[in-house]
Image (cartoon, rainbow, N blue to C red; front, side):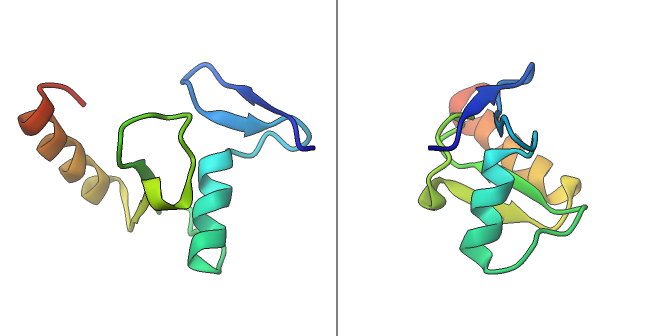
Length: 78
């Protein structure tokens, strides 16, 4: 069993490596390593929900911020 912990920002990380779970799962989903600029977005805005179906990968922070702005219009917050 792989152990995880929640970092200061609320994301799950692997205890043995410190790598973020959501980036690892997104990488597996795409079948390749993520590029440094790529950002992973939790569709349901729940940082601990790292199911493949809940993760979107954006090419950069600018694209990711656009999704957050749409969420803010729909839900009143990021």
